[in-house]
Image (tube, rainbow, N blue to C red; front, side, top):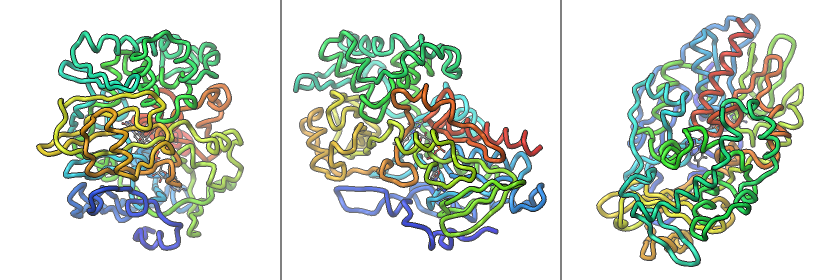
Length: 502
Ligand SMILES: Cc1cc2nc3c(=O)[nH]c(=O)nc-3n(C[C@H](O)[C@H](O)[C@H](O)COP(=O)(O)OP(=O)(O)OC[C@H]3O[C@@H](n4cnc5c(N)ncnc54)[C@H](O)[C@@H]3O)c2cc1C
């Protein structure tokens, strides 16, 4: 049944895979090779672009009579790849349909100035149970990012009242840490059990309407502390702080254990040595599902004993069960029969709060220290910056902006001007990004709910119906909106399918 990806892609709309959408500005040069898993199971090595043979899809007859597959998985991010691997391991003939010409979704391993980088999801930690069990299971190597630390030797630069304060002695860092502690002082009230929102549901509902910006207004902070607290709120939200639920950033704090070190370590320090694509590759090799790239799904129709999935190109496949592993901002674009829950569709149209930009920036020379985090008021176009890699003649910065409309992020000079607020002599040589919020297959970055969403939408998310199962990483408890949450959601959906199909 498997077709080469270009056959499927020919009839598909413009594909936002690595050619169409990866962005680069500044010094001319080809985009670094990225990891991609082909429909026939061929994987390109990250960085080198050399093709490596991988295990071909395991051809399997469906156990269910009268269908093409037992299980069809929609979407090849971590949620979908996990669901497809697990469904194969559960003994089901499984097809994975992915719109782009690569797997990985909102993770995207690339190369920049000779460094392996991630344009999307990057950091992982052992407090994240699902991804860490995969790291252990496949013996994957982990690397460190210098910025992700408030250890001795780290430097925090804070843009306050128009000047840049450089804090690098423990006694200077104290007020900044106190600001973060104050920001999250109430986290325990909502998230004593971050995997069980029902446990403190009444408190959650009370705080539900509150945005991070409103919560910050209530706090008594020095000007420097306010900048630090705002920048962390903006960095975690990846959207304007007026548009993110205060509960959400508290969840980030509670999950790894509630300290600034734990927050940095879990969300900005450890990454896959060989890229997120190394885990995608292991999972595909292990499960060997049939994968069709460049195959955006147009409709899902549940019939009496089967589900029929139709792609934009008009291909039709039937299965005993379907697992939906699409981003929440995109799922409403697929036509479901019976119709999608109207509130799920409404949330998708409204979009979650994560709509900012992540830039990888090469600046000339070395900075004063290896480990630098630089922050600014949430109104700054790029309020959260960290060192990502250091070489003899350049430094790679990872830069987050909450609102991609605030800066022309494709303009090297504009980015340089913004970064000079922290590093007055910075010379930006090159930059790279993926515009996730403009990409029709994600329409956003990482998922954080907006104010009011817990009461309004949560009961509607992730509700299976008949033979259609929802295993989206943007929903669920715990590390939702992370790689970990996606793996957890995909695996749980595969298990529910097993219970249904027997
Ligand atoms: C800039 C950025 C930084 C991040 N940083 C981190 C981090 O450091 N650590 C961390 O843990 N997480 C991070 N995340 C979040 C993490 O990457 C995501 O939460 C996770 O990868 C989501 O996985 P998923 O499978 O749920 O969704 P996705 O990865 O979005 O996968 C969904 C798939 O569905 C496909 N699709 C869409 N429409 C269709 C269709 N019609 N038909 C078929 N397929 C379709 C998409 O192409 C995509 O491949 C970050 C995300 C971004 C964008």
